[in-house]
Length: 148
Image (cartoon, rainbow, N blue to C red):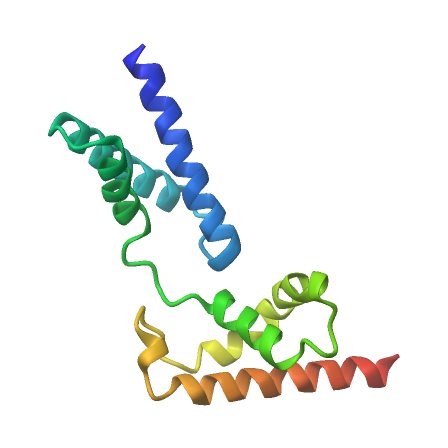
């Protein structure tokens, strides 16, 4: 029975991580080795915390810290923010996420010009990247309108 509980917990941690990766890190969302390793580590953290007499809530908090720690800067979150802030007049609310997903591969060459670390939002280059991405998206929209 203990093995069954561990498999259910592992599945829970995999699902939690997968949800975040799908939303904010599409470049990691299909990395099954990363997901398995990170989920296993979170399960170990949870199990050790419980055996050390932590409450379920405390153990869950520690496991979540393990599960989500040291993730890189989220390109998708930044792109989604730009789409919501700069293009919300042109794109319906229910289409904003879909549009950001569509723009993700188009924006990768721009992201690749910058040294993105997990603290990039505090970097002085954040504003430059924001501006460059906004321009890239606008140029793409303009080009699509000329084709129509």
